[in-house]
Image 1 (cartoon, rainbow, N blue to C red):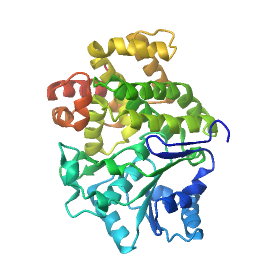
Image 2: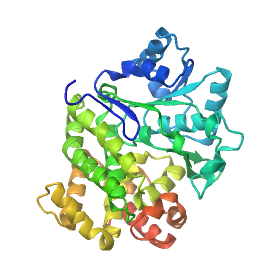
Image 3: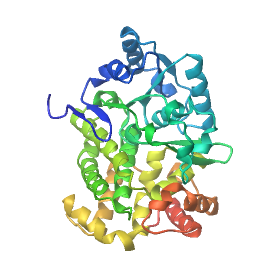
Length: 387
């Protein structure tokens, strides 16, 4: 094995390396699947990587089906449709194949195929997760094709409730996929803009986990290294999409972010979830735009921690202002807009967004417990580009 090929067992069984997508049938068999349902998005369903994965499964005597009726921000109806397809095809496991939306939808479908209660009964509030019939959760093999959400090692799925126009987090410990395959070759065709937005999403997960005030030194260590990998490799992946080393390290940074945010997230995600539900905008791009505004708003309680991070990253100026300048410079270098108005989000619904963000589950990990009015002000600054 070369240094970028490995097998890990934390937080799940993870196979890393170019070409390892060929191991999907083996992963399915390890989890005792005979008839997996490969779940992906409509765009990927038309590509050779998905067709080849299905063909490999069938050649290995696995009766593999395909479901791709998933929106970019998956909805409750997408999950219900997937459950219907799973049951109609007599499937016994799920291959979650794609970006964060496909992975989240697939995990929610795997959960719901064995439940009698409705999906929203399992929202990550209090002890709702104990309502799940754990024995009914289908086995999951996860194959990410973007380096951003880290959903392949997450125990939750973010699903949009279109009736209430909010995103809900569905949680159960057994949603952690049993097998994960990180194959950088699957990310080579990603356009630079998607590479940048998803990579900044990975940064947002690591950074918010690191700044979250809860006591979890293991998550802090993972988050710091995840941030370093983004700093060193995201610009390379954007500038040269065929750079396998950069693509591999960004997949790892993404995975690390989702591992670290077991500690918690924060205001970036609280606002981004709200905007995603209302506007359907790309989650990673929202986090990328919101990032400096949330960091600045939290300055009073994170300044010492950010300075420590600046030293670790070997920034020229290691203080809070130097770190903020690094974020702004990298966003500019990657072509990320500075304000929300650039992606057609104005301040018309500021009060509503403030209220939604204040009660979003991610807000509980923010260093400062902002109220609805304060979140509305932060959002408005992000709309106007005023730090």
